[in-house]
Image (cartoon, rainbow, N blue to C red; front, side):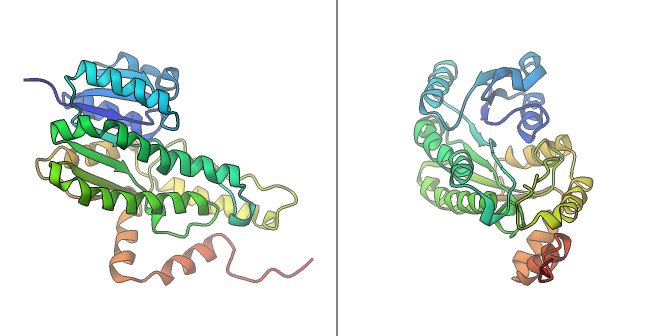
Length: 277
């Protein structure tokens, strides 16, 4: 019997994809672990059951090359296509450039759209699964990452629509609502320019981010939890995982969206009108 195969994007060491690749490999899957540069995946290249490939989700030629290799090596089938690659730049909404906004949407949404058109035949052939590393940021108006939030909200609705459209082919679409996980992204901090309207809040913003990082879930625990649910014969459509995931789920279930503004405004020092110096 042929081994089940999974392609995971964004497997840079220290990130969620890195832990996902190792977890699937321990379960006997043939894992195609990918990143823009193979060297970024470090020792994954030596892990049994893992094939490391260079893949840039924003480059069509790169996607086509990966498709050709996987189709050739797995008899035209792919059991799981795992969209995990993501890009984020921290910045206040009125200080985020169009160029940075495009980079986020290009990786977090547009690359996924093109990848699905290219890999659809392999997934349909196996009646497989398409999985998204989503983010609760698609729900929460988290200050300093407005465009990232918007990109994650967009991909969430895209995935829900894709789920309906893929039903006739027996393909499952799973969205992982990811909350706090300790990764390279979780330790990023906002650098505020001296000319910024928000310079006076720099210390407050840094403290807020540090509090999120302190509670973040270990990525290996995250991967173990998520993979266990994904590989079920009848997996859930949505998986919530990470520190704070239950809180966001509860707020959304109750429709208590006012809580977000109340909490975030206080944490980031945005709850009072600034008095001119």
